[in-house]
Length: 410
Image 1 (cartoon, helix red, strand yellow):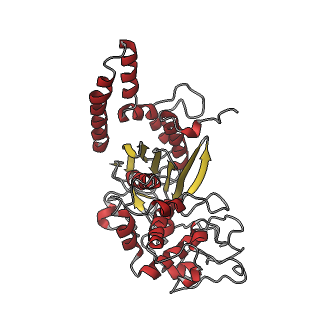
Image 2 (tube, helix red, strand yellow):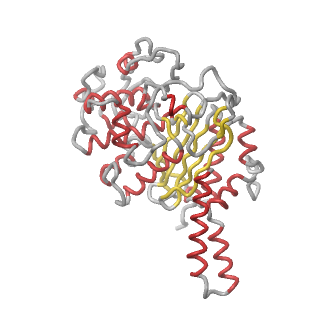
């Protein structure tokens, strides 16, 4: 809660120092109205709008407070970070991080990011491309050293590349999804995962169509990328991501640690079932790091989204250049994925983002392609998706996102 109070204090100070003085010469009613409008944009007032029952009541979840929605779907804990004007406007935790200990969710509570690991990892891949260590359009088998992708006749005209793997257009047919491993279970190597060999709990990666034929989500394809990156760079995957992405962006509460270290685990949420109950382990372990291995917070995910937004405007380059970062928001031509992020047109706006679903965790991040707003939301239950959807709708309405805009008539 401490970061929320700090942000509110700063925002109120800015209002009293700037807005009031700027309205000094306006008629009393107009000046008072503008001050009230500015005050309504403070983090405290926006939080109150989102937490409360919605007015007007348009059915659905509008009559419910956020706490009531969490109770309805049996989601013990939720954490949120809202982006406004290319900065974090506020972050806040709700509920319980672990029903067995009663520990509260705070903005520093770490959740499993699940598939949001993919665009974070894609940023590191693009860093290697930018530095000339890789090419997005190079045959993946010319990059891989410790394993080769069996392609058969599917790549006669078009090779499988980093671009196709990171946009789910490679032609791979695995469709993974990874269930993770109990902390007491033996973990497979990356090569064992790709070959579907024990102790891997998934099938092998295989081709079923030529690249760029269609989009089919492939977690296995991103594990191929994980191996390619480590083969070329010659460092462990967590170290690469720490040095190239997490540290430069100040993502201090993030780590590609599987299993999570005891020290990090002190601030980690527990996975819960769809009924909000503890399961047979605090969390599952995901050696498929690029696909599902990131532990993080909404605040840290918001930092990454803001970096993408600022870099697109040429206002930052802490990881990628403007030219390179555009690969993350430009769909490849088949399906809605760019290199890492999914792109969606909502109302009159284009948004980049990604969802995530691991055992006992649901999460989502979305941000505007040009305008400086967005939100990251993380939950610690299999039923968290409904809470995330309602929060996204409330935040978009409260902040007047252009996802709600209609086309201008001709």
